Length: 237
Image (tube, rainbow, N blue to C red; front, side, top):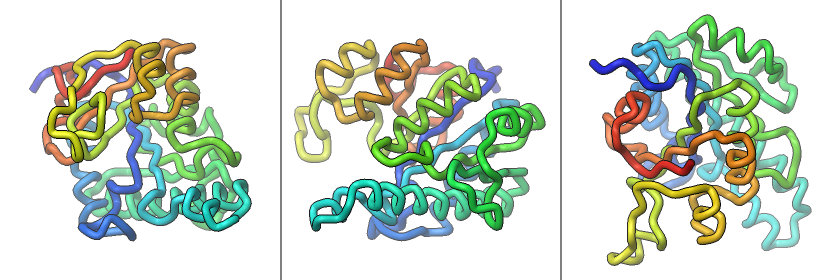
């Protein structure tokens, strides 16, 4: 098997990665499937940090549409990411992968507080870390949290796993003629307003020269190919 190109990665997962066919809730089998993909790259010697979303449990927009306070809605979403983190940790441990959940919102009974130097130490020891709680602040998405954490842990690349095979100019589910991109610059992604990540996350990656790779989550070899530097998905750099 090819030697990995990247020493340390940050994997961004949307909430849909944890949901069953209905698209809501947590499906332990889905979590275990994700864990098996992580195991395959961890066995190559790649250090893995994961930032989960929470769209399978809560979407803040739904609450705000009904008059909910934005900060309250965002905090609920942060708590949802910790639930997904625990489900994924359990799936990892059932496969024998040593894993730590760290949360930017303190809840010591279920997760370690996120401390950068401790996170780095876990990675150096070969442990997978799952970073829940977003940034710990409202008004920031989990995409931005992923970009921030990737910088803090000195990841070589941020990999965003989605349900499609890359970045398109339009939604490929509803537009059969949507164009797929193999490569984009940060400025192209921002100016085209492509819905791959929010503008804050892309800008943060651009300012710090962190490449973003968008890959299909449910193609079994895509994550391994990504860490080996093979052509898969869409690279934004």
